[in-house]
Image (cartoon, rainbow, N blue to C red; front, side):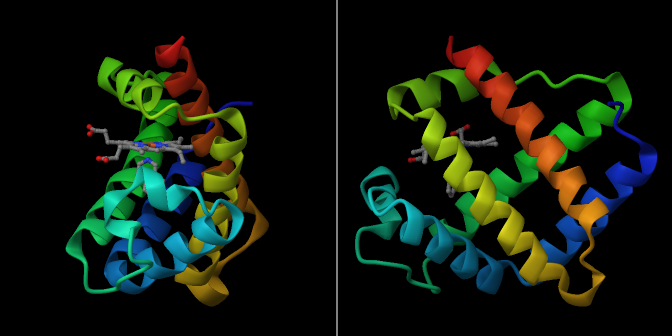
Length: 145
Ligand code: HEM
Ligand code: ISQ
């Protein structure tokens, strides 16, 4: 269905909550990713020695990922569809990213948002992030094809 202004606001406000505690939220996120996908440490050089909260690269990558999903929400609201930059296709081809990995990242992202917003979490908030993620994942896969 259509992506509403209210859904975009839900994503935007929780994106601010995510960034407000970026370091801790990044740790939460990467721990969840590694639990489900231990091989991720071979994809991201800064994970080689486990989750190090003091490594600025970890927070930078998490911010980039969550920010790109937030951008998907903006695109959905303003033009009703999501287009990924060509570079996003080539990066993920080069890293041989698979469909099951897209599902792992989604679950970890949704759980991290839930922790980041605390008692402001609700199903509508979750659905808005999930819709934005699904649309960006589809756009990246299209750019990979
Ligand atoms: C790189 C976003 C899914 C692994 C990137 C970059 C972005 C991004 C923005 C940086 C591209 C650049 O350098 O300009 C996303 C989004 C995803 C997604 C929005 C889902 C909707 C995945 C999945 C995996 C993955 C499922 C596999 C676990 C990687 C890797 C890099 C990368 C390994 C290169 C990191 C580096 O060494 O700099 N992604 N990604 N991505 N992504 Fe994703
Ligand atoms: C996928 N793409 C870009 C950045 C990421 C950070 C953490 C986990 C997965 C990612």
